[in-house]
Length: 127
Image (cartoon, rainbow, N blue to C red; front, side, top):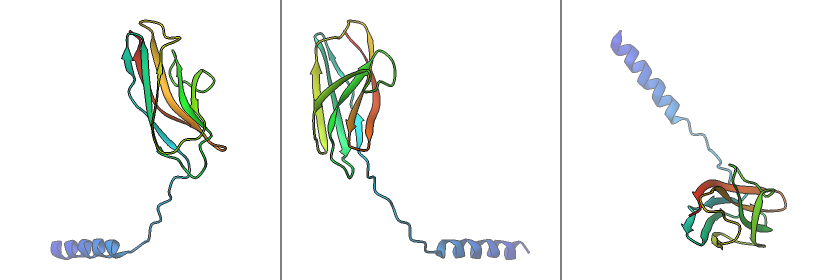
């Protein structure tokens, strides 16, 4: 009886694995950006980010947002770098408006006609 039960389980598993469903993977149609660690120095900071995917729309603007509070948005302190950008790394050095010993939160961002996308949050303390 034990062997019959084991055989029944093995046959069931084989039948399940024999099913051949086609799975369609949807590609992302929206952009994706990663905020890199801030490089802090006595006169300021250097921020950098990497646009990993541009999505299916043109990137209208990109840059960084920063604040003394978590999850900064464009309504906080944006640093607009430029309009239009493809995949790749971008960076900026900020020397004005930084208070010594203050902790800041920063995220890369980019905008298309349909999306406002933020990267991961990075925290740094000014020297």
